[in-house]
Image (tube, rainbow, N blue to C red; front, side, top):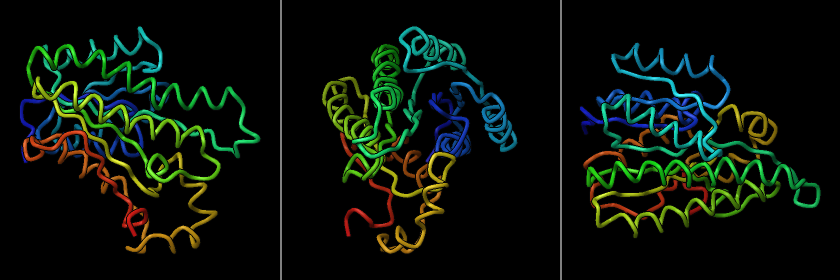
Length: 249
């Protein structure tokens, strides 16, 4: 696959799946706009790794759950792409885990705002240039928690399930403009958000995964790269579960 000449915006692109996706898409020739909220050091490292592989990257700071900041992130990505935005990966997200009976309204709102509202705001802004181009690829990073639920993650699972419904709706609305919208739903993948939980429950979790291992950020990035490519031009409104067979077993 080749993404030469295309510009990709990755929200939450400084770490974890976002960083791996930046590196993967750059390897295929895309210019990468890396959005980050607060961790400038991690974002700089992501940019360095993209450039080390011969790619071109720009850093765009902004909280995508805030209306005007989301708009500015997309505007900056368009400027970097010389007026084009071909690929959007909505990856920005946080967790605030707790049992529902102990979950605060603040933790509920924080997770839903960034994971779901942020995707809505950035996608809405990105759709305008994509509609003008009459082409685009949108990939939303959901989770198996949004497919099957997960104890202690009512806020996160709800946001990720909402993202799946959002994906399917955008796909229907934008197909006429040659814009596809799909989602990936990672299973247990060690990242900064999940490594503490996985370490505590490693043996129990691995028993639920038929392939017998945790996923990697590269596993997820490979699926995103496929959905962002021409090879996936006839795929839209779908959810690719990247979980080693856990949910489908």
